[in-house]
Length: 154
Image (cartoon, rainbow, N blue to C red; front, side, top):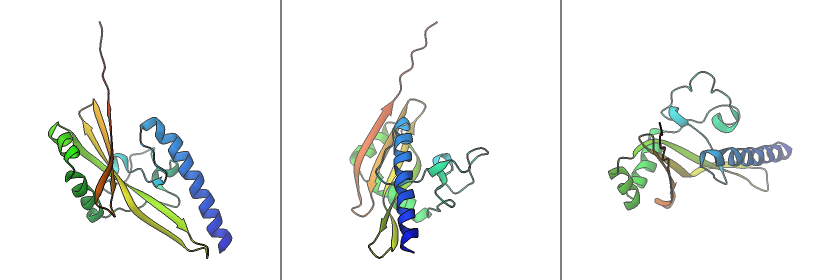
């Protein structure tokens, strides 16, 4: 049993590093395992061809996130003055990604908890924002805004 817990911890560490390296290209990095619900965060199945891509669906299947959890995270984000400014500037909330921390105790007990989440916002095709929410403290801890400017020339 302890060896199983150790193997799970090692695999989780590998998954975290793999996701962090891959997520850098998408500008969302974290030190914990973040399940990517992308455009199908509302519980629908992913489009054809997206099943089973590494951490995107987790190990051994998908994680179901309750509507209450998503609503709680969104409400915390909406109470932040900087997020309110983004929403007033035309950003829309497009998804919630829980960051699931896994802890292996000395006796091999494994616990998982989603104490942090990322709220994704988008503004047309030019802007993206990632809001990190500490659920336990009910506050926004980080906002990362990405913008893209394209100049078409004849």
